[in-house]
Length: 62
Image (cartoon, rainbow, N blue to C red; front, side, top):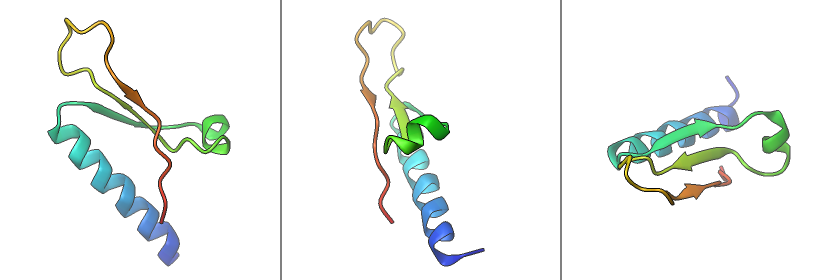
């Protein structure tokens, strides 16, 4: 596996672990969103009573 691909996969895994511990959901994006510079979608669904939960669209840099 190429070193940059390894770094990218490690970054995704690390962020997913942090987001999960925080009680949120982390999803990888599909190709159309990836081409727009959106790598992940992080959603704050910790409490079902929240109507305006946060949604983040981070760009991962290696």
